[in-house]
Image (cartoon, rainbow, N blue to C red):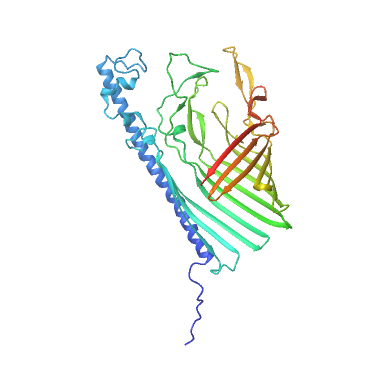
Length: 445
């Protein structure tokens, strides 16, 4: 009988088998996780509906005991409390359960103001050849994140591939999902209180203080799906050229939206709006002039859009440039090792300015008052932004002790950068701080 020859070096999965397994796991997670979230959300909606039904019974009971009258929403002269909820306390037992929506509390007795979140990550590295003779490496992993406040969770796959065909060239590819934690103070478990705003001023009703944002519930954590591919090549001695392309798909983007249909009343609430995207290309050049002097130059072109929301919090339904969209950016940095162990670092940055929305005034024929209007969201651009920062660092070492002295200069050329624009005049409303000098000292032992 002819014996089959077995390859003694094969001890695990092949690359194709490994990629298939990762793809199947990612597919199963993408199918199961939305279904589990929807089931939990539906259960919390049932709890919220039960609470609303309970409030109806509570008001009916109060009306039966008080000649069919409802309690005042705010009463300065009430002995048992000012708010209508205080008046109704005898009619319900658990204050926290009745005051907050089931989605905000996850059906548990958790008072507002606390939140917990965390994550776990597993990663491995694999090569086509166990002796690492082939210059192809695969980094793969999975991260699991969770947040208590909104019962959010997400399994995020990560994948990276590196190929170095020679000593002067490096090719890399990365893909991954990234989970974003929702700030508790902005959206989660807040009392459903808000203040009214008429025109440019607020209602003058006593001295009551209200939160300008209404509590949100049932929010989903934004997920960023990012892809990046790049190449670095030493084109000349001591000169390296790098080219990178990135593509980001952002789902369930969070923005403040005016949920009150009355145009005279602002009632802001954090909501998941339609997704956004960002694409860009970066070109980098690095030059080592000597062992003590190195410089880097980078240029980035980026476009980033999402569904537009105007300054009144009304969704326009049209794509608009994101507030942080940075069309053109240039960065020049250098590092010099001076005599006496003194390091000098500098960076000059320039960008084409962030977008903003230009407004104009229109007289209301009914009220004879001037009102703000706008046609397009974020179609105008602020003036260019420019800074030059310089850092001087000196270290003194005596045995096992190190004393570091530092001098930093921010915006050394004192360029007057715009902090924010006057949306009516189309000019700068405020400028950022000018030149600043900082002195620091650090002692290590």
